[in-house]
Length: 102
Image (cartoon, rainbow, N blue to C red; front, top):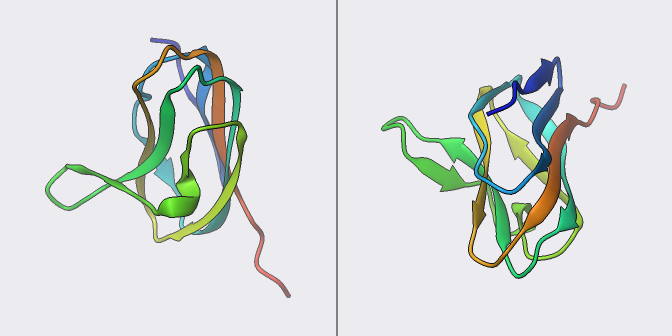
């Protein structure tokens, strides 16, 4: 599996792939979940690792069945992207932190 990129507030989960990603560290705060590529009937979900190490979806705006963007808010935690069903290919998925208003 290719290495994932983590920068403060910018996580790249999938780059031209079609499988569930590894967990990456989210610094906390508001963010945008961005998915593009050929979903081919798949569902792409941003998930948070719960205290028992089980994946939990972050909410309805981060469960996508078509290319799009969904906003979310989460404390510092581990996030991953789950790809299920369909015949996806060449998927790109990332999360970008939305800066706090000053």
